Image 1 (cartoon, one colour):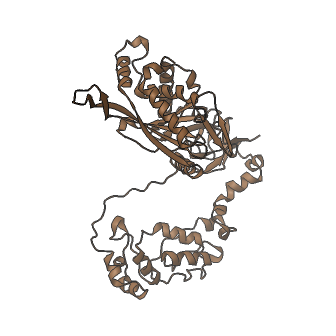
Image 2 (image 1 turned 90 degrees about the vertical axis):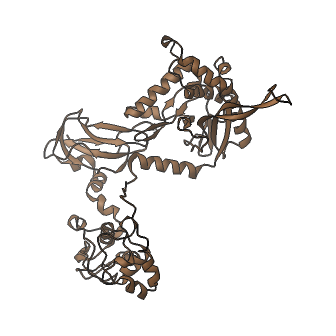
Image 3 (image 1 turned 180 degrees about the horizontal axis):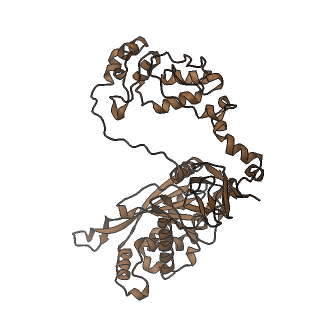
Length: 475
């Protein structure tokens, strides 16, 4: 009996994964442990094994698809076995008709051969909306061609009877270089679009159009001066690389946008004296290796201070889920980690119960796992408060974006000298100024559930815990 491979659930909170690439093709033989594809969530990338030995009968989804968990993605079995019977009608429809369905109502009913037909942009100047070789063009295709100033003469239609449909116009636009506004207007009334233009980044200007050019633009209501001005000071801008925003980068982008769209975010900026922080860090760095303190960092000390301060302010150690605020007794501390694949936030669980050495060790273990791509999905979920540190890069203050549904995130900034009034200093008033190191702290809250004054009190208490870090360690 055929074996259906489903998109595995990568953690309890993951609803879908992106299938980044197939490692096999239809007809290949696989073992149960053979890696057949790579998938990724917004946090990490994972290998998916076949699960059972057999032959790849059908790959149901394509690379780049965002697929709900537990949905069929491939079928394995004996050569010649009926894969469709194993997955049912819905999966068969997605495997065989996804391309047509995604193209819109206009393309429904077209054959695979018609779908595969893609034409290059026309070279002859023909008015937009004129039928191609098939003698007809759909209203949607004509509207798009007119809007983009695309001549449709010579386009091979992939619709019934050779009709030009919207997909054919879209394909032609993808193959056509970018046009300036004046050039687009000129192309709509006549003029051959060259393969590359003389404008910035290879953009086609009105002056680049053959057979129409400035005169055609002027006839369409655009002045010749405006058209010729597009070619003035054409200095170029060097090589340009376009990179599609997809995979984990797109998921991170979507999560950040969703966080801002669904919460009222407010950032409070403060600083805390760092004299004792730096002194303690220096003593630990110079301590004997067997004590286990030598590798503790300033960030580890801040994480410890956060873990001891949050229980006193439970409204900050909370999640807003719909219209419910869930506060937690335990601190599950998210730690932002910069990786080559993007930002990840592993979780130090029960941080308020861990010692400084345990917090430091766990933070380093999780960061290393993120860098290697070996972190598990469960280690990337369940945080109640997050800390992100840009201090090593010299950032004085910034606006961290909430790791929804959390209601607070702390940004740790660089240590800078700040003027402080000191009693008893050597001046005529007995009060002078000294420049002392301070560490910047940027706290973003969800103002829907946390008001500014309570958040400021938390930030003040945290600053005191950092300033008196030696006393905090005694708690």
